[in-house]
Amino acid sequence: MKNELITDAVLVRNYINGDESALSVLIYRHKQKIYSFIYSKVLDRDVTEDIFQDTFIKVIRTLKLKKYNEEGKFLPWVMRIAHNLVIDHFRKNNRMPKFDNAGEFSIFSVLGDDNLNAEKQLIKDQVESDLRRLIEELPDDQKEVLKMRMYKDMSFKEISDVTGVSINTALGRMRYALINLRKVIEKNNIILTN
Image (cartoon, rainbow, N blue to C red; front, side, top):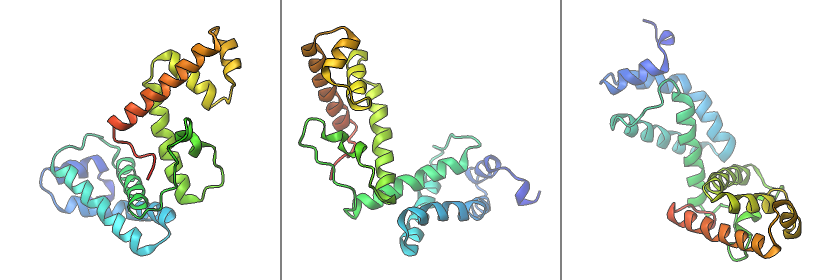
């Protein structure tokens, strides 16, 4: 069968079953897309080459350990690996935007800054999606107050009116939400700061 006619899923399965050449076909098939994606973020050919190679080292490792289970979604899976390695590259080289973690709402300060360049935008998107996922884990009453305060920019007076609780209760829920959020962040070892 000609290589173009073999789906990614079949190639992945063949590689896992010992057909080394199947990986070459996968790399050749997707190299341009993955390489272009990495380059668009780092804007450096040598760094792109390194991250591209690291991406496929990770792919090979995962496939060899038989831990790949995203049947038929090979390219999005590889792109996610590449995306995470780009973020790791920025972190390692101290090019992460600085998020000051001292103030009460400071973990959100990154969400409001619109003047970010492409590399910071990538990290901002990652942090934002991490945060949204973590916020979903909070108890409903805390989640509600946090979303009104952070994403709708409502005052505690407005939150109190909408939720029908006192301002003190709304403040308390916000405080507990932030405490719980910090705990989850520490537990998951999520880096929001350098």
